Length: 148
Image (cartoon, helix red, strand yellow):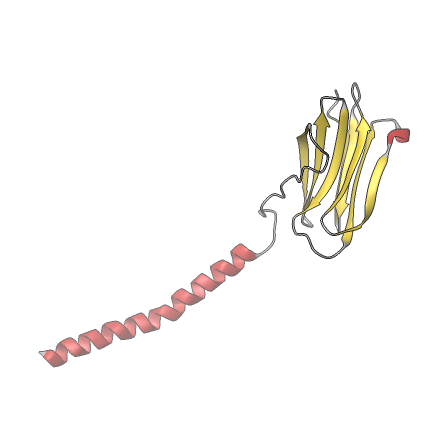
């Protein structure tokens, strides 16, 4: 009887040993899929660089790993900043804004930055705004938006 119980225990243990590698493989595959970059990445938070009194009124996520934020102040000014999801080495980043149909109001900040481009401002009370930004290979342009 003791021999039969010992054989059964050995058999149960052997089953667990054979199944364990499969479980590990499935877990590793799932972790690899979840870790891949894609459109489901966490949103980049606004960093407040436009200053006190500015509220985010629009944002556009770039596939390259940044978010372009449009903010507004009760004073009538709009501000744009492009914030990278991950800071680090200097990378090509830009932010720009202008009143729609008024090229003289165009403001731009572009260069190689470690965390964000901008802020750039324009007074736009009573006007629509064109705005956008870029980071590496991703860019966004919005025209004729948020008409006040």
